[in-house]
Amino acid sequence: MAEFKRDSTAYTIGFAALVCIVCALPIAGAAVALRPKQELNARLDRMEKVLVVSGLMERDESLEAAELEARFDASVVARAIDLRTGETVDTIDTKAYDQRRAARDPALSAPAPENAARVLRVPHVAVVYEVMRDGALQSVILPIQGYGLWSTMYGYLALGADARTVGGITFYEHGETAGLGGEIENPRWQARWVGRRAFGDDGTVALEVIKGAAGPAADDPYRVDGLSGATITSRGVTATLDFWLGPDAFGPYLDRVREGRASVTATTGTP
Ligand SMILES: Cc1cc2nc3c(=O)[nH]c(=O)nc-3n(C[C@H](O)[C@H](O)[C@H](O)COP(=O)(O)O)c2cc1C
Image (cartoon, rainbow, N blue to C red; front, side):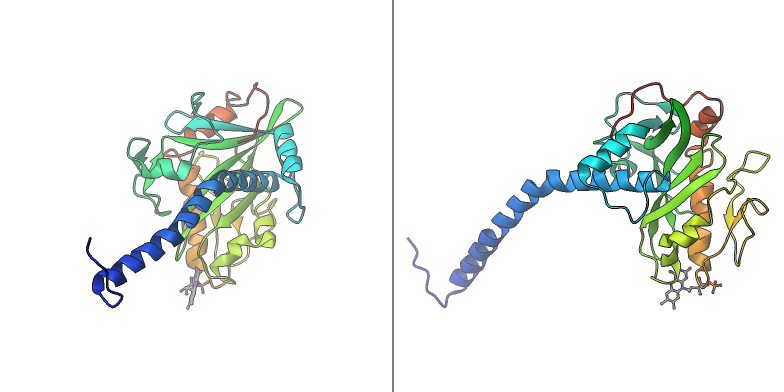
């Protein structure tokens, strides 16, 4: 057997490799062991966002996991939608479905037509949340994403049962500059959206973030205050709505909601 000398190259490489293996094993083990917990946390986080944007939870409210799940289950149904038809897909487990991953998979998505939100691919299936009250559809929560100045901004938009009136908006992940484009996270700005109208009389998306201040929702229903010093992010938000509410994304589903063909009869359940 070859003898390794302490100052030999083989000894140095072998020692470095051993250190790497010894360090990597516990890290890999921890990553695998913690994966279920990470997935649960991601699911709880999603539930919280949906509850907040639908007005079923205060932003500063802190709920235990069981309470959060119970509140969600009491009012919200997660539903997989085929974006091409707007129909429900029963074969998808909404708890396990990863829409972002699906959008990267050529078998599960299609290239998006050119759009200002810079959405490159549209998943065939998206998970929406339907909020029920006394057995009737109260609002629908749609996942949205689009490009601002620096980053893709991920959020949820809540529309009333008319599928036209904004119930709320939230952005929970983005890389815009804090204090400028990052103001999309500001609850005061998000509150300015409530009661605005998403679609004009001709049925096309009409809501836009303007440069400057908009009036109250009742007088100025199609415009939302721009973010000062962040016109590019503001435009990105307008483009995001334009794309996801349009015919290449949630348009067919929203048509079904308006026709009363989307609201669920099934019992509510976690995402
Ligand atoms: C360091 C830095 C960060 C910026 N971050 C943003 C941003 O997140 N979103 C944005 O729209 N504009 C941002 N801007 C400003 C844009 O370059 C651009 O000037 C602005 O969008 C124009 O908006 P205004 O017409 O309201 O001033 C940033 C500028 C600098 C120098």
